[in-house]
Image 1 (cartoon, rainbow, N blue to C red):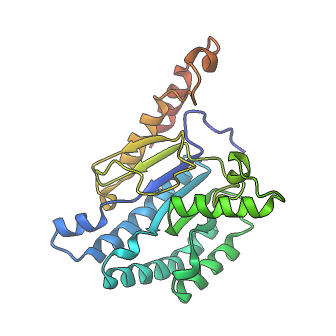
Image 2 (tube, helix red, strand yellow; image 1 turned 45 degrees about the vertical axis):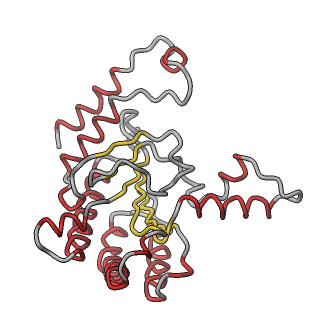
Amino acid sequence: MTKPNPALPRHIALIMDGNGRWARSRGLPRNAGHQSGLKTLRKILRSVHHYGIDCVTVFAFSSENWRRPEQEVSLLMDLLVRGLRKHVSELHQRNVRVRFIGNRARLPNELVAQMQHSEELTCNNTGSCLNVAIDYGGQWDVAQAAAAAAKADPHGHVDAESLSRHLSLAEFPDPDLLIRTGGEKRLSNFLLWQLAYTELYFTDVFWPDFSEQHLLAALRSYAERERRFGQVTEVICDGRDKQPEASGFSVIGSGA
């Protein structure tokens, strides 16, 4: 196994924003933007795999997205079903494990069945992991984790450690990098607990136009940052220069 490059994030979170505005700017229906966004996701996942990033978590449908027009919600649900049915075999062939996080109670039966099939098909894969958030909200995640943690403790005691063990992504390290496209600069109720010390990267590029070069720009921005986690630089570096990590990434990036 190749040693991970310390200048690269192990876990990337993606808010794939701007599909509807991309379509509107071209005189197309909003669903055309979502369809194009799915194609972009496939390309970006291949790039992420190429750079050896362990885990990607994508925000496919939020708990607030139910407020959108009924027709758009229905088309999104259908797109998710068709996308999984068509592309999960490709992910399986690339040894990607697929997982879903969120509240499945309100989702169409056909979509839930396809989600379960995708998880079962890829459950033993040992390569990278793709987490897909559907009907997910960060507040919901924290609330359900707190309830589960309280139920598991004989005295109903909940602390940060016990709550963390019951979050949707408990088995994974917290995201190192969040990328949000579309020009908005907010978290929109995504992974609120897990993003406490995540590096944030915002771009005005609409998601359907997001390319490997845009991904590389985000990765280079990440490589240039110093992650202190509340400490001071002297404690982290311990007298060592951080530049070799950034230059190590530039070698990878130059060959893309």
